[in-house]
Amino acid sequence: MKRLLLTGAAGAMGRAMRSRLAGLAETLRLSDIADPGAPGLDEEVRICDLADAAAVMDLVEGCDGIVHLGGISVEDSFSKIMQANLLGLYNLYEAARAHGRPRILFASSNHAIGYYPQSRRLKGDEPFRPDGLYGVSKAFGESLARMYYEKFGQESALVRIGSCTPQPSDRRMLSSWLSYDDFAGLAACVFRAPRLECPVIWGASANDAGWWDNAASAYLGWRPKDNAEAWRAEIEAAGPRPSPDAAVARYQGGVFTENPIIQGD
Image (cartoon, rainbow, N blue to C red; front, side):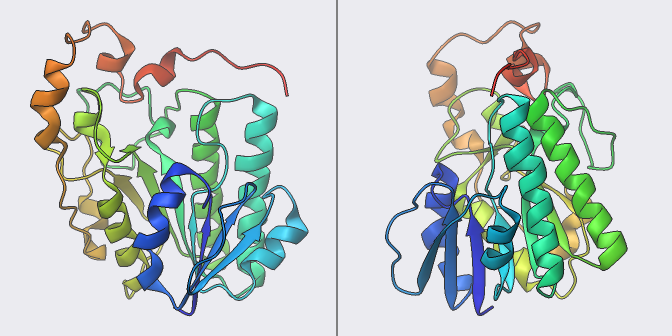
């Protein structure tokens, strides 16, 4: 690719992906509502509010691919989630449609299915069971992406990210963890595959205790290499096992199932 757009570039995951995705395109265009810092070699920086349709239209112009990490990434008030995750995503897809339909890697979330029990192994074609407004926004995003694929041929990878952090830090992450390197490897497969279509892909490393089955997207050739099991002894030594009735031990979405509806702006 000549130009790859990375939204949410000022966030923790965006910062981690900055160097890891650089080799996928001649130029990496970094964008966020906050300043992601000065551009390096073969980088561009664009400050952009996803809720601003005209700004997003300009942002996407000239891009051959998009890794969309932008938006609200935790539970928040509906007004904030609506602007960033619903309106912002709609603006992104409209801009992509206007500029040649570059492939999109959409960072969805396990919280779109958070109320499934941890005892249930999922394939990706099960009904949504969101665990909060954030999860609802990701279910909306997947549905929007699917509609743009069916109606306009806009290809997207719907990546339901588990827990993308430097290393797993609790028992739930022994199942849900996705390493930064494995996410970068997935991105490479998404943009290099001869065909993408609009698959649901579980964003988790090769964890022995994993809950999710990626057989349906195996045609992309992604083979995660890291495994949260390497941290099991350290995690188990850090504290007692939670009660089986605790949300963190019962639901795939963990404590997000206990979050209240946040009021206000």
